[in-house]
Image (cartoon, rainbow, N blue to C red):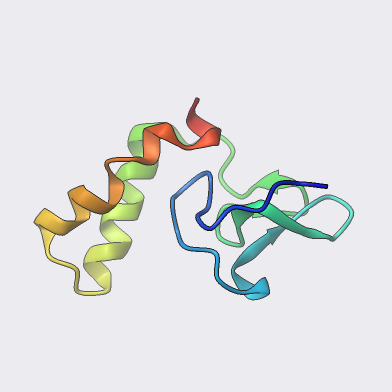
Length: 85
């Protein structure tokens, strides 16, 4: 059985519900990645670099009204996630 994570191992987004979870190739829920990053067993943006992911997440957080200094706090651990090891 696939290990279940509380946070997406690509972008760091919290995975709280089934709707938040990505899907594996067989259609089952991914316990590792969110729906924004992983669908049908593949990354939605397979060529994205670590730096691009950090910028993307910071941009999304700013869109939600999160102050810039907090975006750094929320993105500082992205390099430690499974996708980027």
